[in-house]
Image 1 (tube, rainbow over the protein chains, first blue to last red):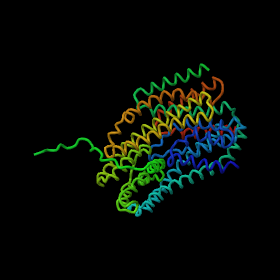
Image 2: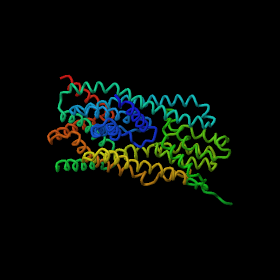
Image 3: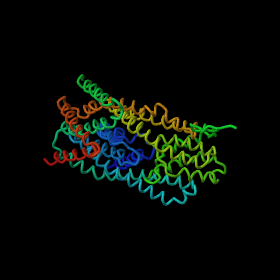
Length: 225
Length: 264
């Protein structure tokens, strides 16, 4: 658990990126899980989890006030768990993805609570805001940013501290082989990604034919290997 | 006797006020924290005031003047937009405030701008550029690229669009002022989402099997079974679209699989 503090900082920074600052998408699972894996010593395993989560994340678009999973901290937790368990390869990707998804679910809830907290702070400053207070505007912004960073950091710490021992125990009892485990996990990820591509891009004329053509190219490339 | 025809387009902006390089850097830095205090009541209203504030310091009387306080009150009210395209509003509103445009016109402009900046940004970025960048990185991953290459490819590609959009938005907002609505008819904003969607659909078709192959890493039969199972579940997900969230279903499926693996 020596890695807990650096992971907490990483989770805080990447969780902050999801909505508040700077939204450079360093919080995307492909990035966050890979970096978390590197923190624990195995970027490659982190990236396998990140790619699986990225396929799933294609289905969740962060539209305005909608509720969506918080992938930044979640991918840090998933990538770090998998990288820490890399000596037991049969289960790593599956357990990492599971840990990431569970954390993303809770993370989405914490984002809602953060927005309610920001509204509470804004109500308290209403009078100052109505009088054009510069301090109130800047203070609210800084309070929101700090709250989000603390939220994401705590989420990462609690999720990793709770899930890692469970994941470690599960890895010891895992009975399916590596290929089977990964195949099941990837089937589920691929299903979400394909359904997302089909539904997100359908509004563009002919997009489904483009998807079908791309799929043909992708399968051809695989066949040629 | 002269008759004046009613203007059919927004009036041309007045002379451009000037801002120092440091002020622009400060505004741009604050744009990155636009959603810092996002909440269900004023949405990004406070973020707009936060980003504009360095420019408003140039109003008569500075930060202690009545003009500054009145403008801050106005700009911290409810506002909704895509966070990247909010830069258009920030540029236009900063110019309007510094040019002494009447308060009623600024308030009407704020209200009118909310909808377009939200819907255009959502289609262009969240449903277009983001998944496209992500899928390109997944193709690189599927072709065996190293972790650092995959991460850098995604971040460079995505942020070229991200920062480009923010900088463009601030520029057109500032140069066109309250006449900025015309800039939203830019072909990139009007037709870009459809082009990006088609490209992203094709890229998705290539990326999904390649990424799956690298993660599974087994023989062709295992990979074929994986893709077939994925396709069957995908058809089911499309049919129940809107009623079941795919990622929650995956969470349940993988949890059940893990329990079986541990218990048997």
